[in-house]
Structures are given as structure tokens and as C-alpha cells.
Amino acid sequence: MGDIIPFPSSDKFLTEEEFQRFEIYRRKMSEATSSAELDYYFNQARMILENAIQRKIDREKR
View 1 (tube, rainbow, N blue to C red):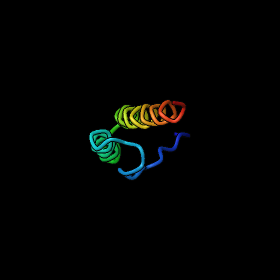
View 2 (cartoon, rainbow, N blue to C red; view 1 turned 90 degrees about the horizontal axis):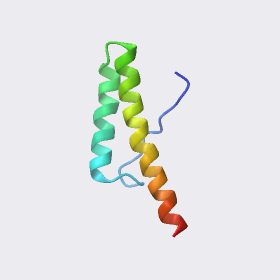
View 3 (cartoon, helix red, strand yellow; view 1 turned 45 degrees about the vertical axis):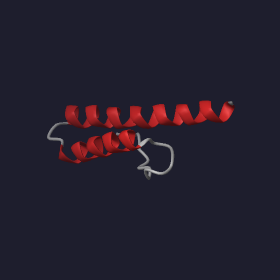
View 4 (tube, one colour; view 1 turned 60 degrees about the vertical axis):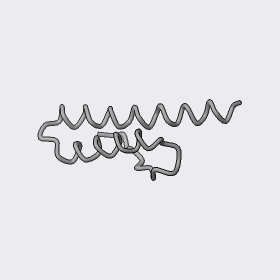
């Protein structure tokens, strides 16, 4: 897998709920028993980060 997910601290740009969901997906990635599971949890965690980053960019443009 070529992508790397940065593991943010909760105080950066994730809401508390997003950070908790991210941590759940990160934990499930390490417990995954197949590459399909790993890919699924990886993509879920990545989407959380991408949405938060986009929200931060949009907020800064205002």
C-alpha cells in the first residue's frame, strides 16, 4: 500500500467524534485479517482526514 495516513492529534483539526471514529478504524486496521478489511478501514480513516482537511481549507478561505 503506497498511501500513508498521518495520525493526527485530536487538537489539530478533527472534531472529537471524528477523532474517535478515526481511532476505531486505525485499531481495526491493525486487527484486520484480510487485505479487503485492511483496505476498507484504511479508506474509511482516510476519508475522515480528507473531509476534515477540506473543511479546514474552506474555513481558512473565508
